[in-house]
Image (cartoon, rainbow, N blue to C red):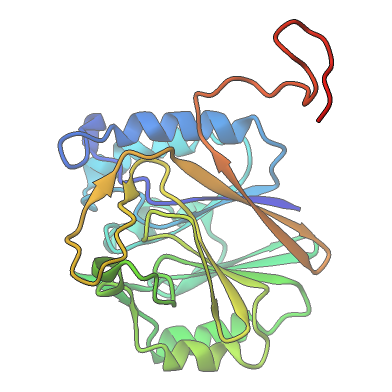
Amino acid sequence: MLIAQLTDLHVLADGAPAYGRVDTLGHLRRAVDHLNALPLDGVIITGDLVEDSSADSYATLRPELDRLAAPWWPIPGNHDGPAFWDVFDDRMTDPAREIGHVVDLPGLRLVLLDTRVEGDPFGRVDAARAGWLAEALDADLPTLLAMHHPPIRTGIAHMDRIGLEDLDALTAALQPRPPHAILCGHAHRTIQGRLGGVPVLVAPSSADAVALHLETDAPPAFALEPPGVLLHLMDGAELVTHLSHIGPYPEPRAAHETDQGSAHGA
């Protein structure tokens, strides 16, 4: 089972550039083309699908996501707003509005949890979300939990200040049947950590990156680094994750092929 993770699209109406300079719609189009060339069983989108939560931005975004060849399932981020649940109602089965929804695939359960706090950039898992999550995880299937805000400290101070607050309810909900991994966005970088014994895998944005400044007093900054997606390969109960950069880059060629077409030693 191969599941791609796309995150932090930040699309604006009519393709307007985010921050006045990042072509997020163009980046999304390239990301969709990239994903459509892969043998995917599905795509999880872990939040911040648009930049400003407006109906016009969602109207610009939706046709591009509908080009995905594989089934796709979103969860909101702090930039999405409550309209998310109406815009993507058709991508969910029996959703719990502003809490989450579940996708059951052959041999794999995907639990998508809303961590958004209306009007604020940070996230929270309250009692209602924690209770729903505990029930959703209670399945005899390998499970991946997807949500926007990472439940770990990233070391990027300005992002940690708007991270996931009050982890007690979340960690309690995970105790009986922890997922195989927690898939997140928000930080616009590839980051790995652990929450207790559960791996936390943070995907890069399909557009810009948060600058890798690990000084505690570093100001917020973004960088135009290569965008990418994470590819989560589930083989039974075993999970392997790959980072796939989105080009353009030259096509792969045989490891021992030279420009003259002759072989050489490794």
